Length: 341
Image 1 (cartoon, one colour):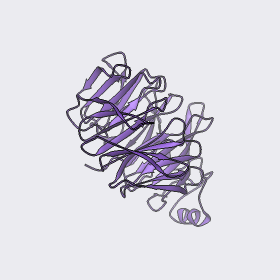
Image 2: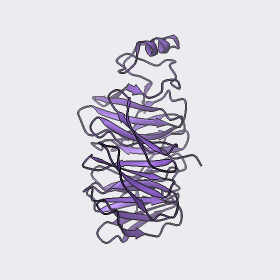
Image 3: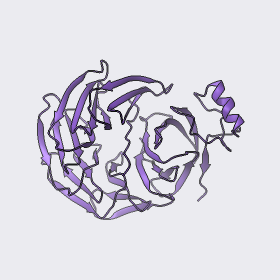
Image 4: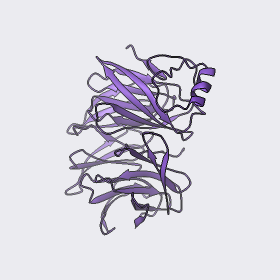
């Protein structure tokens, strides 16, 4: 099974991504340049998370630890030890006082950020925990393994509900911004939306040709972005379930999609299997979506045939000339196919 890659939403003007070489990197979202590299783990880093206050990072590693970092200095504040196997995921609580981690020992652990103490160990999964997410209000967390999503009450830490037979490809779940839905990708190329207060599947999104690796709600909750092993990203209308746009021209699997913070102009971050990180600008005009490439950490894997580079930001003159030589043309968007269904 390939390594899961998780990138953080931009926090102001920076985003963070993990690495297979036991480091994590902070990026400038405006230029795509690396700002800082954090070192200290003894094995590859699987996931990173910003604290709500923005001054701290948490990272999960195959060295069985979660580490907390000072973003300004790069200092490792503390290592949270207790997992008996690789740690796959870590997230902060909305208040920022706790960090939650999950891993190959099938447990979910809740940690005190200030002391590093383990406050609670949640058991019940029968396989490795690879996805954890807080509901927007912080009253619930969803933890996920390959075939099960569990919803936990954050006051009592009791399991409120178990969703079974979901067979997740990249085990994880996401809440809608309003907190009324929990959504995940399945092994059969679909994305399923479940009502939190109901046992029913509210909606199923179908259209990808291969397995879906990542799902993310837009800040306003009106769109869902999905990244797939078919080398595309799709944007879905959450009300109707219709596909509104498809970003193509990826030469490898799209392993992660993440929306930027809420603003007048929405941004989408994508990470491919080859390690390329890209920032896209998503514009909506009367129900039609235009998508522009802002920058890419690697341009060597980008297919230029029939692509448009008009209005694209962040391209050097040399890269622009190379893209034009390989078939890039003028037009309203970069690598965009507007869905007609």
